[in-house]
Image (cartoon, rainbow, N blue to C red; front, top):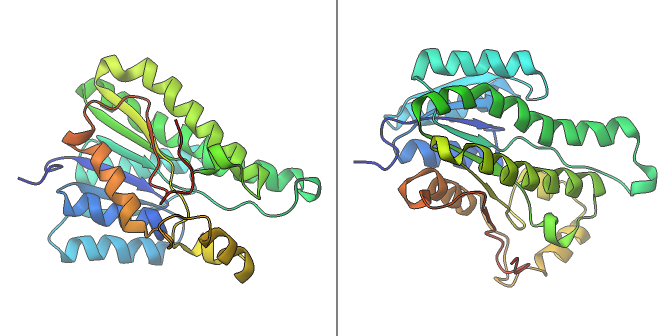
Length: 248
């Protein structure tokens, strides 16, 4: 039997990159998947791919910074697929520019998408997880937590998510809900390739593997934490980073 058979997952930012790979991987492991994010076409494509492989999926458009939209998307997933037992807080955006040039509204938008988005999505699903006595919440952080980042607002948001993960884990582990994070190194995603070519090559040189990671490798770590292998992990930060940093 697939390890996630009978489970229902929500993946935010499911239309591309790590989110897309995670939605497909959780579905391959037996979960029904709510694909949540912006961009109806991309979300529909992921949901259709899952359905074509014999799985169950729903595409639900929602901006994670909009609490009402997140609650509506969660209600739809619950209605069509069942009670949500796995949440992957993946939605994120890059931050641009030197700190002294960053406008407050751009700073706030990065923190809102990463941190407030995780807050909204987690509050939307957590009561049902506690009631069921089982849940898995996995939030996407970054190696930037240890290395810093060319974007101060991005690194700040990711560091906040590690604090969110560890503090929430202490509150809810006794109810059967396990909260962990995954902090990837450089991954071949649209966000990475939006950088200047010289910056991309500088980042590639930091990876001891000699190559960028691919989204499917990050999805494997997420699936591990969501499945039986993750049953002993509480408040942990796994970092599939290819050797860019040795946290610990």
